[in-house]
Length: 67
Image (cartoon, rainbow, N blue to C red):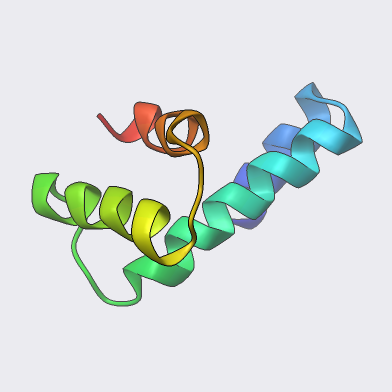
């Protein structure tokens, strides 16, 4: 995560870094010890919509890279 944050800080503005890092932190917290696979990604989408009550646009933004 530290390397990813450094990459973001070197290439993007602070507001963008903050948003990206918040999003990846949400995903990382969701994962816990789960393996990343199709099923986990689908579970994450459901989690975003049902538990976090996010918009479809937000869900799509946060999962498009995982697809």
